[in-house]
Image (cartoon, rainbow, N blue to C red; front, side):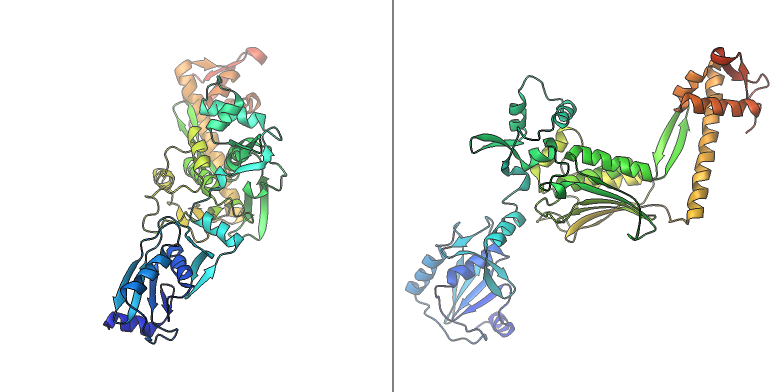
Length: 459
């Protein structure tokens, strides 16, 4: 008997080791359980305490064991070896899960093999990617009920889909519908994109919850919004929420003003789209969360990463949980290329000179963007005042630059240059006339403005 076998016998049964006194009727279930898990070894001729009791190792006995193993579907390549008076079966992890035997589906759990009930089988199929949420045809959702015509038209325009085809043909080609019971029904993907789901308990879990908190914890909520429309609108409105509550600065180049968000919009959009696209929609107890704190932005989606993605290959390997949803976003350019989202987030933050996002994927998938250091309410107000002061100076510079190039201009000309309403432009011009930077020529609707003859005033 080999030293390796001595060690195995002394350590006892485990997630990958099973002892059996004989090749009894439970053998197929043990082999099936290993195939559905991570593989393992079955030692026949060993009792539960690891004592060798021996078994029939003749060719006929091994042939009977092989016939027993062949009852597992789909067919599995199990090696059968003899070690002294023990038969050792090496069961590989199956590549075509799930596997079944004549008595049902089994899965290894710790040192035991467990028969799967109906719900467990469904969960297993989902975890192995054999059943995809977005592909399921919903016979309870015919497309002639609660069809979102405006969402459909927006999508067709954005995807540049020809208007030659009828609506039903377009939906079928997009894998958004299928026939069930003689009627055309939504797939889950189709319902997420083109069905009126507001206040619908069937898809309440599919929305996005946005929240703004005071401080770094979830105790004090300053603003919150639940988004329950079509999936594209939810993404767009989540970005609007982020832009509304994140700090904004301004940059003037020539005659144009550029608004700069404290965190790059491209990275935020990528994270929100990724959350809506790749979340686990079978998990109906949680929704995508977009949360703003003083020190960070967290975007969290249920389900973690897909099976097969590890910390080592994260960001380089592409496995799509919801391929139809991903394809739909790709058609409207919300996704540039499959599998590039993580890299795009990192690149966007590097280019903006902010911290790269942090990723967590234990049960949930979380992307965290670090904001600038948290400030007190007084500090935040001071920062806002400084930003407003800098913005006003930039607008004055834009007015001066425009007059230097054009000689004179009217209120409407400046409104287009600095992006303010006519009323706010007039207030700014009055201030500049008052400090002697420019002069007003004419009156009322015929008034225009020019630099003072002495040139550009000091600010």
